[in-house]
Length: 278
Length: 311
Image 1: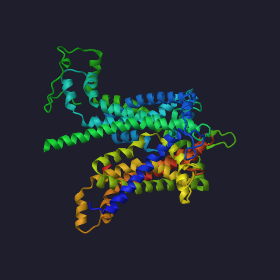
Image 2: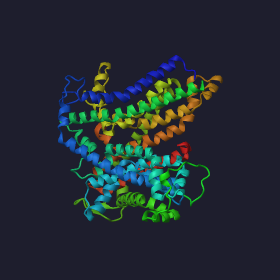
Image 3: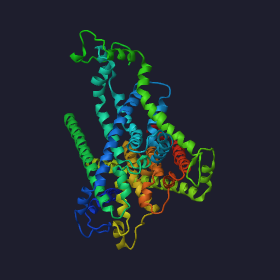
Image 4: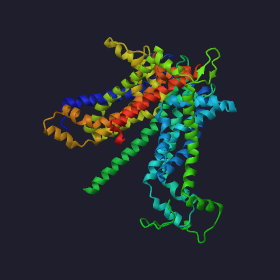
């Protein structure tokens, strides 16, 4: 397209500004975690690592982290089983109500989190508590698993659609039963999508706040709930800041690296293809 | 899986272990045969557990929520009384504070959506049509990467940015300006930041899929670059904008945590639900139907516009 250099430069400047708005706040969190002061005054007067030390020794953070890992583990496990089952049913069978089932799987993330949260909170109070099942780790896992199912479902269903059914039929023709065919032929075929779904489900559960606030008992804190409870407390804010900085670094660097690697990979492949063509 | 049929399309070399010399008839084989013969049994086996979870537990919870919305609360004991009444719904419509909160939240969600679209269009244009492939890869990673950074972390980053005596005020002070502080403006910016990738990715993808010769044709007919963007590109972007807006709109509508940390005194639908969930559950339940209705209406309008066919 024939853009004037003025238009090009305007767009370039706008893009730079947008990317700055995306990353400067995150950079501020990392910088502010080294701020010796308790309040986040700017510019930083004195740098120190004392809040990093304080965060490292903070019992509440450790407990919350452990709770989060447990919740995410169980929610992911449930989502893997249920999500794969629905994915198989929808990818391989045509039946009455198929679209309704599809909608039902997507509903928990299509509706605002607060609706799911309030609905579960209401059910736990009115149905489960009279039965002697109280809010706690169990209720958080139930809530999380519900919206994690779709993550596994999406990945597995997409992969199943591309798979060659002939391989399964061949295995069965050779005498393998349904189960053996599944574990030795079908599963290896969608393992990558299964693992990707598991990672997404784990990440989604690990980051969830809204449903958790409604389904957690007052004493139970996942890491996001700990952050939520302490963010507005002036004397805890510096520790929250350190945790936030850690989360930025831990979550973004591996994803960045993996995307760079696959991105570079694709470029190389393209380059080699062009070479072959030439 | 249809009963044994010769597969002519593919002839893979089967692993030798898969070919037993004599069929063994263990329990697994027998169950397998039954499952093999009855497709509906397999389907039932696959759908039973997920439907128990999603159909009974989840949908049941939503139904119970709707029923609770018609109950009432004893104002002295905070005890929920299961008796049918329209009171909660009429309260939402008649009490000015509730009605204003609902309208304000919808307004904020629309503002967030517009802001996201306005930022996504020049970014998508630059990425798709001007940037070099290398820069394009960088930017594509750059706009999706923050999705992984954690929701509360991002809210916290804007809480720091907008804080009293914080970075934004420091930046604006030499210009004689002051930051917006915590309030509705800060809330709209923070929400737009949170959901921006959901708008930016489809818009960028749509720009990429517009063939260059359309732009050339427009130029040949005398259309200047900006005229081309508005008359040729924008109409083609409509499906992407609508698809993105579903995310930005509905996610903003249900959010209340950002409102708590950067919204100052701004009340949104979520704040009202959260503050009533223990004191007056029926009112909270009734209020929770508002975002459901608005989102369903929005989806209906989006579908009717015909823009969702490609998404």
